[in-house]
Image (cartoon, rainbow over all chains, first blue to last red; front, top):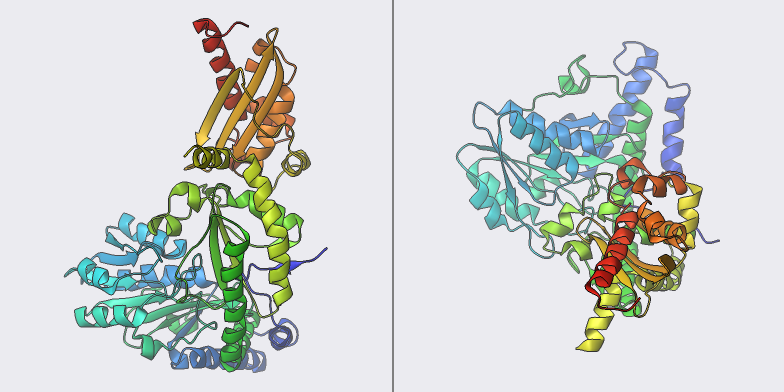
Length: 394
Length: 130
């Protein structure tokens, strides 16, 4: 049976070069980078090389990079840490409606801690209007967070334009760039942000490692207290092998980015044009052009995502969905609902994340196996029979 | 994939009694697309027994497997017996359902009961000679 992995938004595989770079740090170079002996030095050098590689990827200085345990940790750290450090100035934060849960739920925690939260809406493509951010900012606003690109619908946000607003208003601006860093050009100076989150497993690095960049001079309260690792901002012995892998992945991403973008955009555009031609009543979600290179997302009407996922899995195809049934919380994707999609359509969400290992044959295979799956589930669906009866009737 | 029992997977991959019954004696609908699952059951009754049971389901793997097993459990039973099918007995018959799927996807028994109630109320109204 064919095996086709199309869930690179969940995680990319680890490149062989990345694994090779990590291996010594799982073996002889096992030292604790805080230690003042040869073992410590070796580990520290590996870690500092990685810091420089990550800094290079996003156009900044190594001293401003804080390694974390994941994109989620970076986002928690940014939202809670940046807001808490400024609470004397004010207790109001602004986020978009389509943020990742690691941002949204952190913001909800801030509410429990006495902050007020404003949520900025998105349009039908999932785009934030910078003017809405301007309207949401108050005198006591201390933090704005809008993601660079959305992981569920692929839409890239006008971060530069939003940064102009936050700069004008003198508010700290964080962007969750987990979906974009290492995927498309991310330059913190060009974007004009004050803090940025990224994660290794989105660009062929290992899982369990991320980074938060905070502009020099911007204060942040640590989440983890303990030793003085990471400039005293993130205590705990660093995950050196993973950090080294993240660094190597960042270096490769930087050098291969243009070619990767071109290749992945080709795969994406082919599926976006051919899938709706093969299957009736399919909606493309997210912005049609201004989206992540390897990201193709749809809603298949009248059927539910998890059932599609399971049948695709039985054919060797791995994808993901934002349907209520696939989420542990059993709620339809807040992203699709914020974009104004009705619940019954949001339930049919299907997300393809292409990676550099995918081939055009993978698309051929999806286009071969998916239509019968959709047909089979529609034959079972009371919503589809209501629809066909209604269209026959009128 | 969600952690489903072999029996759930088997019924999901090969659901029994999918479809609609023409001129059914009773129809029952449960759930809605907002919560993610919706089931419609159709029944044919003869001598107080469920002669035929069919369903259409919009929903996840668990919802489809639940519908399939309920249709199998109900077929041939008397109405009284069928009214005794519960979400618990359905889950047991499926060798368990994931905890978070127990309530939202396990609507089959209710949908079947609604179809039987629909039949009984029609019968009471005398709309149909049975």
